[in-house]
Image (cartoon, rainbow, N blue to C red; front, side, top):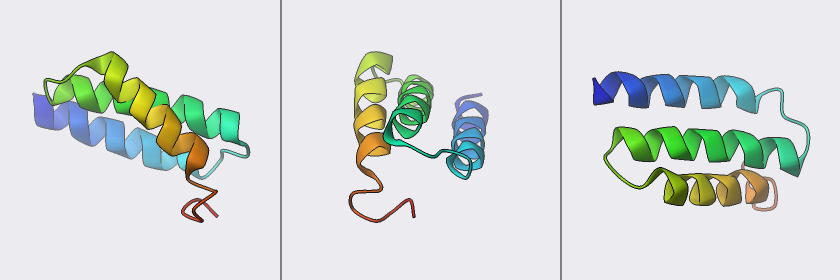
Length: 66
């Protein structure tokens, strides 16, 4: 069941990443994805959300998004 949650989170996050235009949208998607992935792996969802939000907001600064 955890594999299904993880795969679903990755698919949804990858799908949303194509239509995100600014840091706020990417941070929100990253937070949602991070929380779901952390929960699926048995970690803390809040910590996953914080890490995901940071990764989403900063991904264009290191030229991963564009």
